[in-house]
Length: 282
Image 1 (cartoon, rainbow, N blue to C red):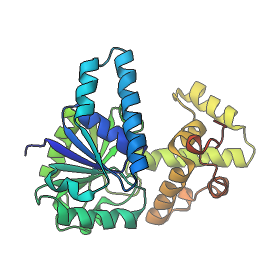
Image 2 (image 1 turned 90 degrees about the vertical axis):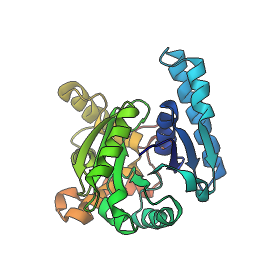
Image 3 (image 1 turned 45 degrees about the vertical axis):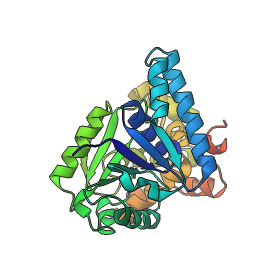
């Protein structure tokens, strides 16, 4: 299967990072979002990111210009009619994703693989919204996408081995390391990460330690590059809450119950870096 043109849907932080790594790796990329201002911001973020690579000597100016030349942005989903591979990176809401996958299934060529960058939502459910469940899989990139090597590859109930092999080979062409996970809520990364973040928030709520103390213990004692509360702010507290809700609802175990302090902070609009305030002020 020859993959030349890649569609990326969703121009947020993850979407623009995914679009960048595909464009850097020689693919023609069509980045789609419903909002033109999001596409404009994404283009600027990609230009800035590529500029940093040039400054550090990891990319030539010519390679940067070539990557930008392979990137197109559009608000029209039907521009993906000729795409050879599609990655969805929209909001982490199951029904919104299902609706999109049904639309994509009717739009793109029948052999095209539809991948989701979801961090916790069922790939089997997304596949069931299409007539090609064997060609639906999870391709969960890590943030920031241009710097992080891991891609969590999720096999749905009906995903074929051929589809997984094609997607994994594609990851390697991006310079990424594909690691397969089964289709359980949260997969591997968030099944382990989110309970740790949630427990750190409980520790703040119960006065066990300040955010600074908790992060320092995990950095200096456990050799984590970033403390769990700094990481939560970086991910977005609303995203953390959404993933914990998926874990709690999907597995039914009270150990995944989101901390009341997390719920309260999200309700107050204290979402971390993106809102300027979370466990820290930015």
